[in-house]
Image 1: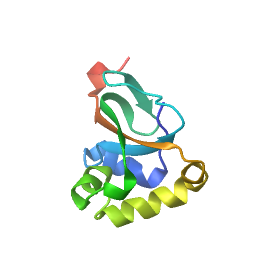
Image 2 (image 1 turned 135 degrees about the vertical axis):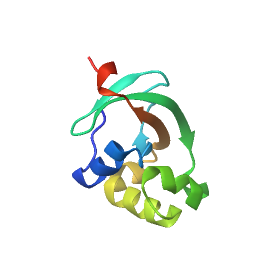
Image 3 (image 1 turned 120 degrees about the vertical axis):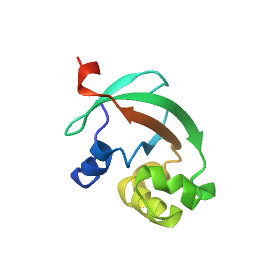
Image 4 (image 1 turned 60 degrees about the horizontal axis):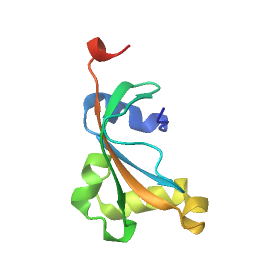
Length: 104
């Protein structure tokens, strides 16, 4: 299950937000996996890759629902300050919302 703040759910449901960045000690998801987002529905994970937050571009931020890389980094710092301080790896999770007929 992937949890999101309520403010992100409309963008996920509309298909505007198709990725998320998470900070983990170890990779927790893999491509091809199906998962659930409460308030949005089932998703299929299409890619999971380690990334360097310092090299994110504005183009990288758009599918995450942010206008700029700086805005995305600011949100990540607010959400994951402890994990950043502990040196956890950032992962980009790319997903697609599944149609209702593909949900269990």
